[in-house]
Picture 1 (cartoon, rainbow, N blue to C red):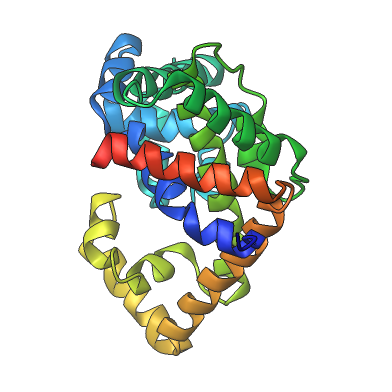
Picture 2: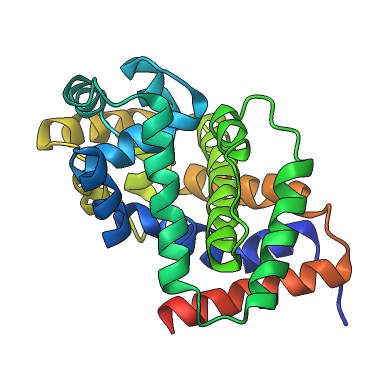
Length: 257
């Protein structure tokens, strides 16, 4: 059996981590959680995702999210002023847990428990300086039932990888909207879905033209992300790494298969 390197693990688990780890944010479970606290679903996405980092200003929240236009984040904070950070975090977490219960129950409980165990080993042993959002999420209480716990751990892994990716993007001289414009599976459609307007897009294009080498810089950021996240995954031994890949594939098959 060929031993997978940390970078191999980062690449082999990417679909599960990035594809499933945040799926709850755009799912009916998020809409239900938002309704329970009296805000629109997209506003709970914004408030709830940053809430584990504490009570933030809209400017700080914009910096942590990186993908949302500042005006949208500011309006969200204004319209949800009565929603505390603690309650937003609780509601967002509940959406994640319920998504897991509703979507991962087709995976055997012992496999989900093992997936959670391995993911927690990665996240809990990671050094998180300069990664404040995942540091906040790591402190969120974890449930006992396997589907919910696995869903939360996939989200923790996603926030961990995502924080590393933001750093890698910036190290290549890109901001996040520029990186999204470069990503083949994203582009302007993704930016518009996150609230960027036509005037915003034109300004992003201007920054891209001034910088140049967008595709090369984006590809380098992707490689750096796999490498750096791979260092975190390297805490797993060979058997644990193989298990993580197998269990991530099983989760993807259960949800998307």
